[in-house]
Length: 391
Ligand code: KG4
Ligand code: ZN
Picture 1: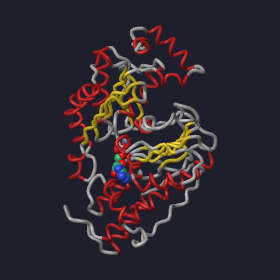
Picture 2: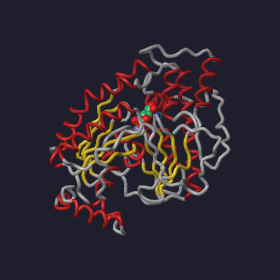
Picture 3: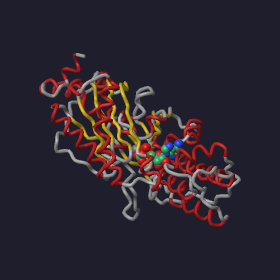
Picture 4: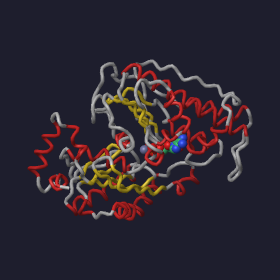
């Protein structure tokens, strides 16, 4: 606990000295610092708080999901999301502290998501985190949600070896990052239209399967026969060095199939028939093939030492199976399902690194709805001027 005391920001000189030591050759040592970090996440429709010790030990991880609120609308309603975050943030943070058996005074630093996400939702968590930091004189860092997803793999795996390759597939993002060293991110692929999770949600809505679509389609796909539904879709050719994705054509292919075969959406509460089950399996198979195709190319091109599969869609059992059985030349780290969808443990883990290095973003930090993760430009990955990207 001695090292923890050293990191309290009131002792600025010692923090600075330690930060200096840790940015040198001993950089990795920060993982050994037994800081307690409070993480707060509210970028979309989960209000979450967690307490993490030494960057890798989960003392508590509380997630309040808003799925019930948004399900009738088939997607997240931003105004409702912000309001619900506001209602729940206080009790979620208190539950996380209580479950960890600590009080705010025991916390060494606060780590909150600052983007990307819904700006109203982000503001609730970030403002709450800033008030706590101000009242308790704690350092605070604002974390990129995508970086959080990447850090969701640190709890149950061996330490990440660099260069690493990360495929982040969620409701808002589908991106491939090359991470030559910790904290440095270069984008090597991204979706040009819908994110993979968004495609799952839209197809599920179309078929009357409810929201969120990913888990339902995943379950149906287990018993469906993808070959039985003759879903015609080939991944479009993309003229760029980027290992880009595209899912909107697949969504249109499902729509066309539904119209041509006069398939009606499943009525609320009814069991889907085999036509829907097979179509769900066929759709999921195509998504997996698209993701695997790019992951394989990326692994071949960059020979990473660790491959990270993260984000809500990484919960998908078919995708996990397919990625694990693929020979990619490096171990694949994938978080367990509870850490795969949005949570604050991953935000605290990403924040731990920066707090242990003595960083403090201060109270000026603001939410950024379109925050990017890239902080390096890799050779051969200059953005083509004509392509449109969804970031
Ligand atoms: O990471 P996440 O919780 O939130 C974002 O950052 O977007 O991801 C949510 C997305 C939703 O689109 C949801 O349908 C999808 O992850 N998802 C799944 C599964 N579980 C959640 N997609 C496919 N299979 C699943 N089992
Ligand atoms: Zn997420």
